[in-house]
Image (cartoon, rainbow, N blue to C red; front, side, top):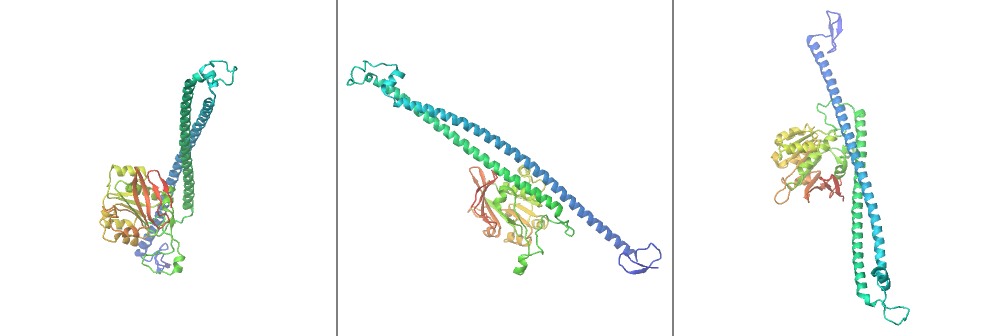
Length: 430
């Protein structure tokens, strides 16, 4: 009987009713295709399960962060209440001191007779009703009266000094109240940002299509309708039709960077020794990971040591890959696998001249965060061109023990801004 092969589709003469394939080769090929499809389905499901687990972990983390922030808000509210009560007590004390000062002023302005009769227990040395032309009946007590008034003036000065101190304390408490109110506002804003993140995670969970073709998909990917290479020529119309991925990081540091564009994005960190370049880079690693980016950290200066461990714990970077030694070849290989590569410092890779710009062009979808040491002349080691090749250049400074990030160059509209790494707040906006 003639049947149709389920693998190649050709007609063949079958010796059995249940025959499905024209040859063992087609049978094997069809089996392999089924297994491949099954593996693809399992792979897609594994990706979906991993993504769901990542989302759950992020939701738990955000909810814990919100709970911590709310407790900080409650503490600030209680502190404000305490400070306001202290201020009310100080106001009452000032009123009492003002009343005392008023009484002292009246005594100082009083005539000699009033002071002698009421405070010195002195009587006139003759009857003042005898003659209006006689001398002051209290002139013999003039020195005692003057001494008494001088004592009252000193007492008045002490009261005035105490009032001034009380007013100064009120001013200090009012500033403290203002700072706590600012903290509450920042915490409230952060909760709103976290709620927005939760909504975005929910949208990502239920609306983002499952990947089917990418072997190692990066999340999130650049949103374009075609792969655009830096040296590729296209029309202006085509460029207008393309959609590039932009995003913002969370919190004060997100405002410091502005709205970022992933395409050919690179951040250069420089600064003096001890200014906090490594601290800031680990903070960025944790922040990018919280947004779903895969991160690998090259700890070439510090190595893999106890301090590295403490920074991973401090900035919640346990989920990233980290290496203590590498070269430019392995760095390029990893640029194909990870969303974000962070290297401390870039010079330790022994890169050839111009390599920093070539990396950006060869791997336009990879975000590079590179630390560059300073020369003795105060310039970036590796050449001034690095500053211009970067999409953002940040100078780390140490001021009175506080680590400050200064945005020297930015394509995202925040040039001249300053961010306190120590206090996690913007201290200067331009």
